[in-house]
Every structure is written in structure tokens, then in C-alpha cells.
Image (cartoon, rainbow, N blue to C red; front, side):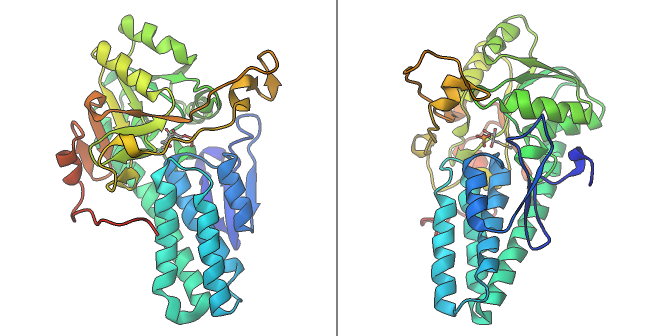
Length: 358
Ligand code: MRU
């Protein structure tokens, strides 16, 4: 087996979907082999696979897996079943637009090969998902190239949640930019915020930094403001789950607080995301659907309740940072600095087409 740091987060292997089970990290490095799209949907819902770009590929592979499962069916059964599978996958998590984009891309690829029958359509869905895997890795490398120049030659960068290899197919978005900068010789130290309640920072980002040999220190989420006040943060860099057409950005809960703190302390606040995370159908962040997860994620830590019985908890998984608080949006096509409706439009060769996803 390849070393953990070299293993793709999600891939198509031996006729099924293989993914790193992120619920088990950092204690155990376990690969899941899934042969049923319903199991993949459950893996998305329960966050065995997570992070917007990884979810985009998971959505596409989910459609490809469903198509492969039904490739022997009659035409009508195949198409009805594939539409149902796409709906099922869409119902898993609402915020990361990449998930919907991935499902749509694989479904459209299948539909474009309808004349070749179910087997031909299934092959086309898989080819599209595989293309997305390659594109993801290339986009992250490009983001790293564009974004590294924004980070100081030497200093402290604060990041939130997990935006490394685990949140993508490989390399990462915001943590990918840090990684690229370190590879180019920047002497950076990373403040890793723990990211309550799911602890993606403590469990996943700290693990990835260790694997990569990136200097880092874990902090509780509420330490960030105090560090900034002492001048110990030179830049904040985070990822995104959905960027509206005007640059408003949904990301892991706590991101907005960091952006407000960064502005108050005149610290640059960067977002790194592939263009597939930009939802050109939404004029502003107000319409971004925010996932609310179970209260137990807040009232328990590692399965143990930390509150008196009966305590009510509110658990939004994401928040929206207004574009005016973002210094730059780093994409694989270049940097929108600052992100505005106009600067984001320049990243796209064609105007946005109206209309709903599938
Ligand atoms: O709930 P998660 O862990 O899927 O949330 C992930 C994030 O918020 C990431 O910051 C975002 O998806 C960008 S990942 C490159």
C-alpha cells in the first residue's frame, strides 16, 4: 500500500470506489472499498469523505457506480434508476456546490452516450469522473502556484478546518497553497484551529501537517483573536464550500469570525478554491443553503456526552463570509483580488448560463 500521504483521498479502483475513511483518522488509516452507490451516499453523509472538492468527485463517482451497478438493466430501468441514484446522492449534504456539480457532470456524460445503451452510458459516466480526478489534482497544484506568492517568505499562517489532500483528491486547496509555499522555500509556521465540533483541524489538518513535515501548532478555536492581537498571525487562509457570484463565501463554521478578526487586526484573509466551487447562479451568499447537523456533534466529544442531559445545542456546519472581508480568492485560473462580481467573471471564458442543476 502507498504511504498515507501519497494515497488519493477518493478514486476508482477494481470496479468500485475506494476512499480514505476520514472518520477513523488520526487513530487509524483505513481504506473503504464501496460497491454500492447507497453506501457511498452514506459515506458522504457521515463524513467518511468530506471537503468540497472531494465531494465533487464523490458525487461523480457515485453516479458512475450507480450506472455500473445497473449497466445490465433494460434502457428504461437504467435511466429511472440513475435519476433516482442522482437524487439520493444530492440529498446527502447541501452546502458544497461541488457535490451537485460532480453529480451533474457524470449524469450529463452518461446522457450524452445514451445511444450506446446502458453499458456505454455507464462507461461515459466513469470516464467523466476520472477526468474530474485528474482535473482536481492539477487545479490544486495551480492554486498552490498562484497562492504561494501571497504568503510571506517567513511567518505565521492561520488555517481553519481541513483543506489539504484529504479535502480534495490530492494536494489540497488552502493547505495546498501553504504546502506549495513551503516547497518553494517559504519558512512558514501554521496555526491549526481545532474546528469544533467535528475537529477537522485537530484530527485531519494536524495529521497532514505531520505527514508533510510542515511546522504547525494546534490551537482551540477561540485562541485566534488573541494571537492576532499579539501580531502573531501574518495571514489567514481557508477553503470554501460555495462561493457566490459576488465572492461571498460559505466555509466551515467559524470562518466568518476569523474574517472579522482578521479585518480588525489588518491581517490579510485569503480563500483558496477551484472555480468549480463558484456558484455563478447565486448572486450573493444569502441564498447559500447552510447544513445543520445533529446536536450530538456538539453535546458529545468522541462519543462521550459533555453536557447535562437534555441540553439543547444548535449546530450549523457552515457560515458565510461577505466578500468585503476577503482580501483575495485564489483559484487555479488566477487570483481575484479582491473577489467581486467583476473579478470573478474574469475567471470564466463564457457568461454564466441560467438554469437549475439537473
Ligand atoms: O464539513 P466538511 O469537513 O466537509 O467541511 C469542509 C470545509 O469547510 C472546507 O474548508 C471546504 O470544503 C474546503 S476544502 C478544500
